[in-house]
Image 1: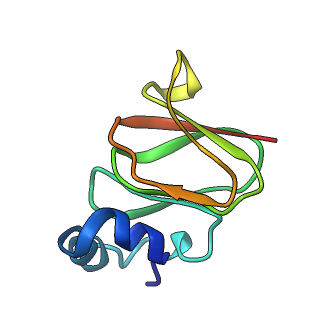
Image 2 (image 1 turned 90 degrees about the vertical axis):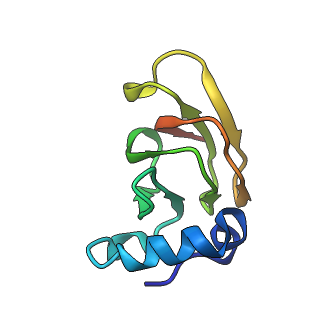
Image 3 (image 1 turned 180 degrees about the horizontal axis):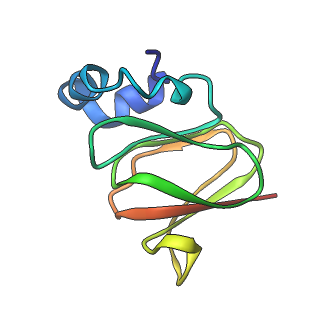
Length: 106
């Protein structure tokens, strides 16, 4: 399983090892344009298309947004309420606020 180098730097080696050990069934995350490490310490991915997406596993860790879209992270499912964080296109960021959904928009 390949995890983007900026996620590796954001979560640290201990979490990376835990994520890699449990990642056998999550190979779809390896090539996706929006990746994050979930609360379950596994890598997850969101489809690189505009709209609201569930953040399976939830998260409050590093995010890599290699899409050309801005990512708004929401605490609630269904992208409801106010965003808790934004991640600009083609950047990565440590995220300390929990999020359960993400909206990608141009």
